[in-house]
Image (cartoon, rainbow, N blue to C red):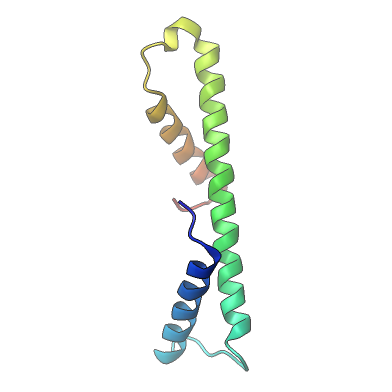
Length: 95
């Protein structure tokens, strides 16, 4: 489930504020640019994960289709998850 834009905005603001407050980061000028950058990274991540899921679903369907009757008893969800893990590792996407 993808968080809403407002939820991402709130989360990003908390992250930036906490990092600055703890002296782990300094933000020259307004925090707005840093917050926007964090939101954009989250959005890019969720877009990549969505594409990863779509690719895993497609590849699982192709694999099961190619197996024909031999794939009748296989757990599709497990196959999708295994493909998803492999794709995530190959693409460097933490899931």
